[in-house]
Each structure stands twice: as structure tokens, then as C-alpha cells.
Image 1 (cartoon, protein in one colour):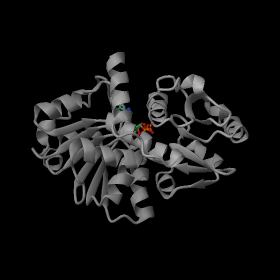
Image 2 (cartoon, helix red, strand yellow):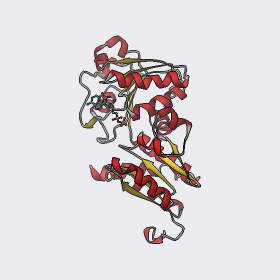
Image 3 (cartoon, rainbow, N blue to C red):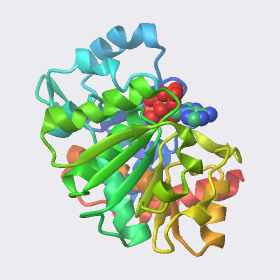
Length: 293
Ligand code: ATR
């Protein structure tokens, strides 16, 4: 294998990620591993960009000819005002996680819902068509989940969130886009409603609850149907208390590592037109998480 980083040339395409912080991001590792494996003359770099610096960062990206980039917290929605066009998914979600360059134009995409849906298929082997889904949380990650699930034809969604206004805003997305999905919002007290909890086929946690082994108070997975599945977008720890309880109740359960890898694979396809080596991004993530644990 060639000495990748010393192999930079005058033609090397520079890609990267903007966010604040970005030092924890696993995207540089997984994208550079795939570039290396395919011998592509590309490099992926983390760019820490504070909120107030976003406009000048975008000017710099345009001026320097950066070939494409990912966008993470806290810029996923503010970036909308700085790109020249949006993909349908990014427009639906009101958020951008991937920008591609088309000549002088920057086009905002969102690969989070594709990544989420790919992970549901690969890691939980479920087809959510017709399903009744409970989404926990109503932020950007919940938007990605809702758009993917609505496109896949779920029949009903309940969004449970601490702040009901945000849940209502999220559900307004269904009306705006015309998806034939019945949506309701609920307080987190829904956890004690045994009858309602017993109707869900799939529960998706899009909040940060689970990090640091935190747990939703009062959420007893025993109230779910025995055929229900649980997806937790958190991936550190690899097994959150919610996932542990789901596994102990023999429910299908998966963490967010698969979504992280699959959204990256889709961004890679958009930037390079190449298929990333199968499984490589996920393996890179899992190795990095295992060595950090
Ligand atoms: P992201 O883009 O990762 O989705 P976000 O937009 O900040 O991040 O959204 C985080 C979501 O997690 C929100 O729905 C938030 O609830 P609020 O709307 O009430 O703020 C939810 N969340 C975060 N911490 C939580 C906690 N400790 N308990 C319950 N919900 C929480």
C-alpha cells in the first residue's frame, strides 16, 4: 500500500467536516480508510468551526476549492442559508449533513435518513412498511428518522419529547410533505401507558439519553410487544441501558454505529461516485470505539 499521507499530490481532492467540536468525530478515520483502500487521491480533514465563523468558513471553503464536506453540530441547520441548493431530503429535514460541490455551487444533502434506514435493514432486518413507531426526541436526528420512516411507508408515528412544541414542529413535516402517515405527539409520561406502549412495532431513540449510561425514567421495555424492535442512535456506550434491557427481553436491538457508517457511505458515494469497500466504514468505527473504551 502506498504511503497515503505522504502521497498527497497537486491534484489531491480535499474533503472534510465542519463542526464544533469535531475532535471526537470518527468521520476522518472512516473516510480516509476508504480513500486509502480504493487508492483515491482524496483526503478528509476535520475543520473546527465556531458558530460565528460559519460564514467566513464557507467563503474559505469556496475559495480553497474544498471538494465537499460533512456538517455536524452546531451547523446542520444554519448551513441552509449558505448553500446554493438543497436536495429534496435536506429540504424536507431542514438540515444538511453533507455538502457536495458542483462547479462553483455548493449543494446541501442529508444522508442521515438513508443511513438510518440502511442500518434498520442491516442491523435489525426490519422492513418498517406499515409499522407503528415511537420516536423519542424531536431534534435533527428525529427529523432524519421521521423522513426515512415516512418514505418507507410506516402507518403511524408517535413523537415523545420533553418539549411538546418541538414535537409538534417535527410532526408538521408530515403535513408539509404529504406523507400518508398518522402522527401524534406525546409527553414522556407515555412510558407509563401500558396499553399504548404495547402497540409499537419499533422504538427509536434520537436523544442523547443513553450516553454515560443514562436512561429514560420509567421506560420499561417489558411493556413493548415481544416482536418489537429498539433502535438507539447512541453508540457510546455500545450498549445503552435501553439496549441492554431490550436484549434481556429478547427484543431486536441495535445502536447507532451502523447509521453513522451508512450515512458516511452515502456521503462518500455522493463525493466520489465510487462504492466504499463493503463493511469497511463500520469496521473502522467499531475498532476506534473498542480501542477508546
Ligand atoms: P440532534 O440534532 O442530535 O437531534 P437536538 O436537535 O439538540 O440534537 O435534539 C435533541 C433531542 O433530544 C431533543 O428532542 C431534546 O428534547 P427537547 O426538545 O426537550 O430539548 C432531546 N433530549 C436531550 N436530552 C434529553 C433528556 N435528558 N431527556 C429527554 N430528552 C432529551
